[in-house]
Amino acid sequence: MKRRALRDEPLFFERNPKRRRRQGILLPAFDGPSTPPASVLPAEVLLDDQPLWPDISEMDLVTHFHRLSQLNYAVDEGLYPLGSCTMKYNPRINEAVAGLSAFNAAHPLQPDHQVQGVLQVMWDLEEWLKAITGMAGVTLQPAAGAHGELAGILMIRKALKARGEEREVVLVPDSAHGTNPATAAFAGFRAVEIASGPDGAVDLEALDAAMDETVAAVMLTVPNTLGVFEHRIVEIAELVHSRGGFVYMDGANLNAFVGRALPGLMGADAMHINLHKTFSTPHGGGGPGAGPVTVSEALLPYLPVPRVVKTDDGFSMLWSDENSIGSLRGFSGSFLILLRALVYMRGMGGDGLREMSETGVLFANIIRKRLEGAYHLQYDTPTMHEVVFDDSVQVKHGVHNTDIAKRLLDYGFHPPTMSFPLVVHGALMIEPTESFGPEEIEAFCEAMLAIAKEAEETPELVRAAPHETPVRRVDEVRAARNLKVRFVEED
Ligand SMILES: *Cc1c(COP(=O)(O)O)cnc(C)c1O
Image (tube, rainbow, N blue to C red; front, side):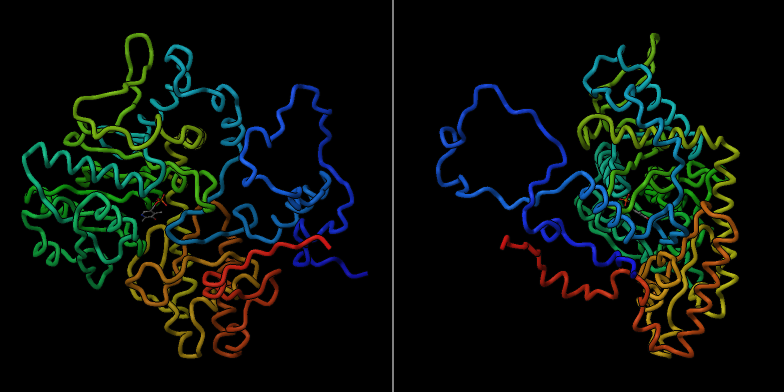
């Protein structure tokens, strides 16, 4: 007998069309006083009939979602090399600790003396982040990297205001993540692009020319989104500071140099850290994340509130501070994400974190060496934690980066990030992270090399991929423009 194909998994609405009475749970009959809805709600908002909710048993529910979960690719399945996103393994102990009620049942308005452990977690995390970055202070409040950028730029704006200056420009390199110019604009600045040099790093001459007294800050990603280290970062920071500007460092790629270099010594004034990337937390479905910002002495007075302070009898929350930019959200941040990051750091230890970083960089360089020649490298410079190829060799056979990505699904791998950074046309941005061993890295390289060969010999096969997945190639434009939500009527 043929095995049921996963792709045939029906919707709940299709599953039990005869409406056989089924229930997942049985509630006892309600014996309290009841108020008929008609007496409290106006007639025009009441339905004439019962809604057509499907009747399903508990096993219907469990099997349905279990089967759907198998249609997708996950970090627990194999290499997930999405560049920039840092889709690493999340140690299960993080989840065990985050599941403790002492942490997840605490309320942010509980008096300090009842939640000393919770406050200490935040304090300890701040200490680790200061040690890792060499910076003077931290806010744990921002909910994600982009939110951290906003916090940093608002602090810079306030510091300029305190000097009596109203500068209106923020300089952003052309390789930057889209959130950088968006943040600058959101905070009321004008984002001005600066060009990268032939080595993929910021062109110092271009920066020199653009860096005048209208520039509030330069936003730099280190290492940048090409995986290239800004090797002149100290010179850049000196230049920016000497003309009265601030250096905002996008620390989303901190996982490339934890334990190896200190942004504080590079001249950063503010830097966000994507805890969900560098310090592990499941992400990719849109949240939750955490984007703490570390700051230099110059920005300390402007840190958001609330924040944890240490007193003679333990820890307490500071709810207001004269020069603070205020609050960016309710309470102190995504606490359980902060907790997971601290568990990860303490589990790894300082040496372990450095090794994590070095391993990710090593794997990215193995991939660069294994695939160079088969795929084109626009910036052929040593790579940090990720490497950006492009599809220019394959385009000669009519195969584009999307086709390569779709074909990878047939080989059982999640595709890399595509068409980003924008400075590389047809980009394939690969970030292996340290999660898997060399065998998995090699298997991925072999799949990529096999696809490069196919692109040459049987390009039509690659163009029609994927062939093996539950869902074949979807028409993304049509799906977005012509949204169809199916609802099956009872017959
Ligand atoms: C991921 C990323 C961001 C944005 O971080 P979020 O947590 O997704 O808001 C910003 N810059 C770079 C370089 C990134 O990789």
